[in-house]
Length: 129
Image (cartoon, rainbow, N blue to C red):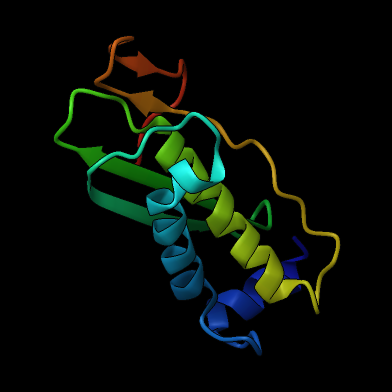
């Protein structure tokens, strides 16, 4: 995104409202609706969804991390990825009037535990502390 767009977000000056708050709620709702959005994704009893944002002024971007949890014996990576994707779309929607050249990219799984495939950790990346 343009540096001015990021500054508007951080200063709370986007006309549609508080961008990170709206995007957080959008991501949480999306995680809960994952089985409705993605065919063959089974409904899961989520015990928690966290969506967090980190601004990077040097690169003029917002980074998004989502964590989904369940007590079941399955992975919830699709719910976390859906949360990140939808949060990014919400940010785009709220800021498109001032910056139509924003790019959504590099959505990826960083860490997963549980499920049949066990633990996955993307090399060279850590979950946020």
